Length: 426
Image (tube, rainbow, N blue to C red; front, top):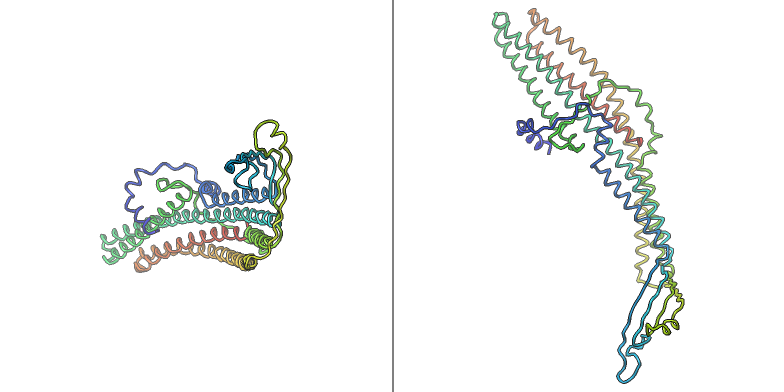
């Protein structure tokens, strides 16, 4: 996918330059990028799931309450030939008019357990929203700093190419003056070609990174987001505030705990099928063979009914549902334990990555300084005839590599910090 995107961006560069929309003049900060990415992301899906869970809880609570109704029915029962008796003995009359206004409902222990299950699932959904938000922040940070790294590498490649071109120009002048052989000019051109290839690759990586960030922010492929440059300074002491004690604040723990409670409530729901169920109704109205006022007056009143259903035998279906629910409970508890271990391992890995990246930044910064000094000395020695061109070109190559290494270390530190923040639930 990245290769295809690169082909599209390179092949359509001429068109893209004409259709690119002007980007905002002010650089987009990381916080602003996160806010923009929240408009269309997996976070919105998690919020929808939370709203669905809230409606399901409302439904389960409503199942405990009586339902109001107004029922009106008309029945015609054909008479027996030559009589005024109805054909179907189960009916009360040839014409029957019934209107009942009241309440009806069901009550069983499973309804109470269903409320507990829905409440736990709502808590799990809320925690899932927090998990999705943290994942979004981490993903945006990766794309944001990835684009910043690509821009920094492109700028470093431009500097290296400019230095190589200047060295080639000086070498060609010395060759015309008869001071250096032609092979030195060839080697200088090869050095320039290598640095130009580095720049082309850096430009391709920058275009892909900007496209990925633009798609994540909802800009599309036609707008290049203007972002802040890759931070060149770090504070290694910031890592110390992230401790293993903070890992328990991750929303994943609350989500897992809520899922275990929901599984336990599901066991209670299954067990309720072994207990009696009550159906009740309380109505006021009439049940009359005629709609005439005297008949309606005589057949008007209050009707109260209650039925108890006691389960006896269902060929083991209820017991199977109970065992199934118990297995799901055990699975949820096991998942909680395994995921908890993984979350602590993620923290340990992210913390070590941040510490290592901080050390790499210091090491790369010193190496860049030495490489820059090495280039100055090597070129001066070459011009003075004290060193070969190989020494000068090697110095230029080393400087380019060290610049890339410094930018990569700075990027790795920022990504490790993003992972570390997610690891402690920030």
